[in-house]
Image 1 (cartoon, one colour):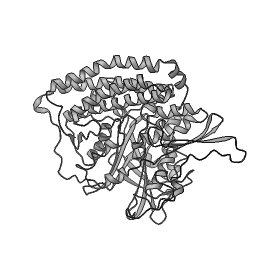
Image 2 (spheres, one colour):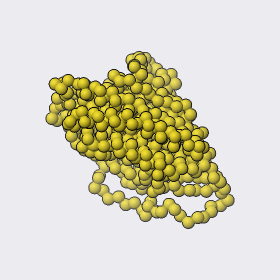
Image 3 (cartoon, helix red, strand yellow):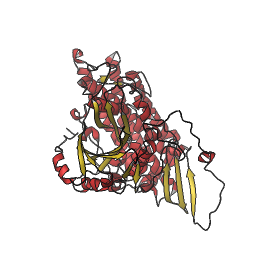
Image 4 (cartoon, one colour):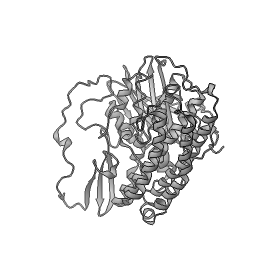
Length: 548
């Protein structure tokens, strides 16, 4: 079996307790991993010990939340070389002085995480290099996810906060650099993203991604919805280019928390739909990247849309929708493949059989194109250790040679029963990231073909679509979990804390695009503006998932 068996050993939490002995003031049991409670001024020391002495080199998520008597930051840690090993570090701070030591010197990705935690929840991180809001305007009053936030309070935002950033050209003193705004509304930014760029001549000296223009309070909306029916439609709106994978992120978290089983047949249907959805995302990524790099609309972009449409036609047959699928249900899926079954299976097989020819066209027109190679090879370089510091995952990480894929490394669904490979490239550049996505389409096709074979031969009397789920789902009070899946863009995770009601007490989304975009300055400084545009395109971000 090409999807290698997970060989990781169990985490010895008692051993970790000894390692962290001088910092730990308590222990907690979360559904996914044990957690150690540390003092707010020992954050860096505890995280450094876990990273350097225990090998937990991946800060996958930071969850911030408020209780009646305290604020709390949870650093969710795992390992790039063994995803089955997890541990959490919980940092409580008092409500009258919510200040905790920053983790940024230990994990660079904590920079954006902690800014978001301050912005939405209200925790200050002492020593943070850039303690500003990241999603809301600097003048915003209050923190939307704090318990005392008044949603009806009027917000007075000065006009200068909305001024046009495209000012008249002017000089400031004797500076040799030039400030250039890219976005927020620009085809090359793949959504509303503002890149504050400083140039020295034609080279990028500094670039700062300015996000938040598309923030829609998805976490707050999820916390206002019932587990059973009202939350599932929201995930489709995060990464809306390959969105069925998002549904699985939520399903996996709540099914873990509420101890809900999923029938095997439904697992195969989930795997089929998600891999078709992954292909739609990769096709769009290839097509839009061709536009970014050398403006090829008539060939590559339209070829990519052609193949994406074929996959979307199949997904429409399966789900009834072309974009917001809402196909998953807690404990399974909403319905079986359409009738006549053989007609549907033949349509899927025809699509898969045509893919090798289509992918050969992509390589002829795109990866084999001399202009494309000149624009992409050795540009946007992201070394593996730097990528890990930023929590980078998905094709961006695998394009830097990081062999990390949750479908294999933390198996779920039917992936561990199928024959497929994790794709990596060692170039660490824009070119490698494109190669990874095109090769992953081939692997998704293998998975889809095997799923069709399984579904076709499945005994009719055993085609169970959903397990028996209570009408009202109420996980135990103070139960907590963090679960993730391999989205088209990388590790997409959801943290849920329950309070024995039908709605989450806290719902946190771990977005791969958020992490991947934070690494853009590392990829772009010292390069030219066209290289910056190519590097941004190679990340394949979706702002609906960055901002949530």
